[in-house]
Amino acid sequence: MGEKTKNPLGERPKCFKSNFQEVLFIFVATLAVGMGSLVSGAVTVLSGFVGRDLNMSTVEITWIAASSGLSGGAFLLCFARLADLFGRKEIFIISSALFTAFCIAAGFSNSGITLDVLNGFIGLASSAGVPAILGIMGAAYDQPSRRKNYAFACLYERNHAPEMCFLANFITSGAGNPLGFIFGAVIAGIATQFASWRTTYWVLAVIYTIVTAISFFCVPGDDTQKVPLTFSALKTFDFVGTLLTIAGVGLFSAALGLGSDLPEGYSTPYVIVFLVLGAVLIAAFVWWENRIEYPLVPMYIWKDWNFSLLVIILTLGFFAFPIGMLYVAIYMENVLHYTPISVAAHFLPACVSGVVMNIIAGYLLDKTSNKTIMYLGNISYVVAFILLGVNKVGFSYWCFLFPALFFIVVGCDFGFLVCNMYVMSGMPASQQSIAGSILQMVTKLAVTVSFGLANVVFNKTAAKPSREGYYANNPAEPYAMVFWYAAGCSVLCVALCPFLTIKTQGNAVVGDAEQQGKSDVELVEPSGLGERMALGELAMSEQIPSGKNMADVVHEMQAQPSKDKVL
Image (cartoon, rainbow, N blue to C red):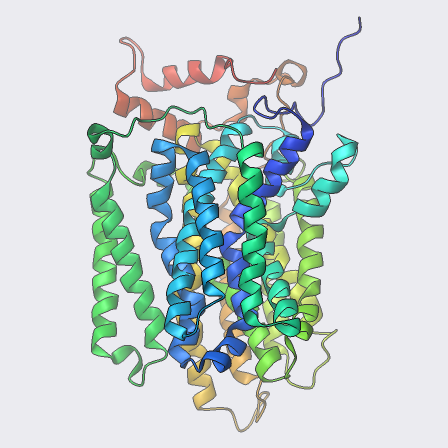
């Protein structure tokens, strides 16, 4: 008998019984990551129509978008820790079911305040599911391989598992977080045009009813070590840290969101109190996490240079991307007077760009320096926002908005995928939910914070429009100033890229170590995040044998094959 040919992509993880189950799981993971983004994209298109229908004030309309991001970002770390302690699959299924229920309820809202509150609960449900599913995905694809690259890019190479490739590419090619925003906008445009804004929420409910149902069968069981739900286990949960981060982030973000809509602006007394108190509580959270035995966020993960820098770049990118998309939609509705379906149609270049760029990114991850990919993504941001900034009423859509909508998604897709791959490849399984939640948290909170800043830029410009110069008497001016603000954030992203040291990711295929002349140890940088996490865990659990230092133990752990690895 001849020797079995190894799969160049890496073998299918043992937790999946078939390619079909694996594809369904990636489909579920894609929609799980895109929960909050779908809602954000939908709200971007329907907010103006909802405001007119429910007679909402400007503040109430603002909080349709802000409430879900605020609640989701504030609770992400809490739910991530719960998932790691008590079970990821269970928490994900519950969160998906609650997301469905709140979407149904939101469609029946008869007042602006009710809709704002329900959007907050929708954000809460989405924040519970994301770290859980990312933790499951990271544990399933625990080896560097091309298969892992394509799983995280949500696609398969066409020359492998051909019977499943079309389905995988069609339903999951790069949706997730960036494209979730775009598809949410398209869904809202079509539903609002042909039915009403309420139908948008009900369509989302139908989608996640299906996701909840198939999750029972396709999401693999979580075999990482769990803690029984006892009083001793609850003592290891960081309740103080949870309260500090929720209160601190909530107050700070609420102040930024409210300040731009109040008559006295940020000089309003209670807004100042919220800002100062929120900042103090966030600082207290950092102080507390450095001193508690079982922290919500282990602070030593920030000692990894690439991880910290990637989080900063991703945060700056999300200061720009959602705000840019939101104000493009508002510009189309309020200045160009497009219908909902027309807005959705004009966003199609972003959808096409997202699908194509995720395919390209998944192919390039193990062949091209990821530092180069980050350069390309952030330069695309800059190009997009410059095009939007110079655009004026009367200019051609095909010359300015069309290419801008194409390039803006390139930046978001490339950055988000590289960051996810770095974190999920470098952290141990027991901390992968926290790892995923950190990225999700910064993107959600960046949107909330940047939303307030963009409102300030827009309102200040609209209050004193230019009477001469490039934007003289042009209604596009306040929107253009917001896009220039986003361009500035993008330039900072590009400026930080030279300091990254990441190379390719996922360029080893499981079982090919001897053929490539490399061991698994050589695939992990000595100063990488995974080693630092392992060292920290060993130190806390006091499992280091006498006569050996922590580095020796980690080296032996990395070199020793795991029984669960696919060989």
